View 1: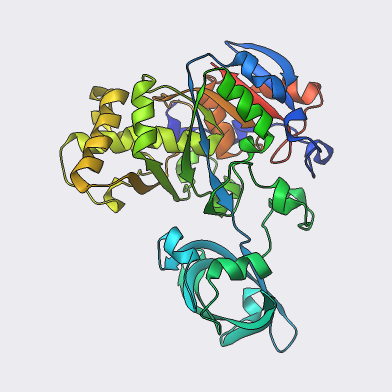
View 2 (view 1 turned 90 degrees about the vertical axis):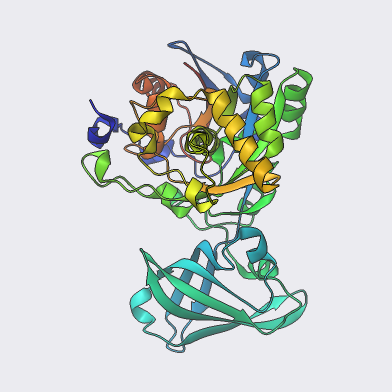
Length: 406
């Protein structure tokens, strides 16, 4: 069947609420590890993952950091308004956004929108032992959200300072519980660095410094990319066919060092998480765009949702050539890293170009992430999920892990 006409109902499975891990286990690397190798399924503990990884290989992780993206304001009437940060608007660059002083604007989802007809919302918050007044004004509607203009009356404080003081970490909605203080630590990977995500790259939550040291000791190279996970990662597929589902856009950053490391490893990688997969596989299509020799802007390098299925030129470009094209682009523009965005959808019918092994959690029924996994294991996802359900594996963000080797 053509990818666009895949029926999402074919990717359903029973997931009882008690199988969803509401909290993480105490020791991250003591989660269970399902191992799928060439059609066979076994299990182990995550701290033994190095037993299955080839020496001399390259592992790629997503170093994004989850921000405290939920802000709450009360109207004079007492109505509670929740503002959920989606993506930076002014300034549009993540790095510059978090060092903004005095004011900034975001595209946001607004909870209880009907109660906020207009006007400015304000609240006094305590930051660094002093009171600061933070205000929010609603501007134009943008797609499913609104532009919200924030201001605060202390120019010595950055927007990052404000979020750290008063923002709430946005744990996944399917956990059906409030955020607790421990989530600030447990819902971040140990290698998280670059602020910007509203959801964690959860496959990385199993790694500990000890596991990373063991990987290094096994002569496995590690590199990091950045993909800022958007709220769209939780967006359900409501269309009967996936052609009717619009993928969310996510910002990516890949350094020159990572690109060179890919070349040094025959453009093959072990991806930690579906976010790393989308970043790495998007690189191929960016490199295909650059094959024509056009001088494109970073925005023009954006990978469209259906590009892998529509771009006939991709058949003539090797993964190595694609990465070389990106490096040449960075050289021409005197850049140290590629900054762009991707909307790629990976589903059965997709041919993987770079990712050869995948570390990932167990995903929601009828989700685009399950489609990605199915494409990776050549449609064998039910064997994996049936085994996980029959053997009491824990599911979703705080659940157990799997290592997939097609």
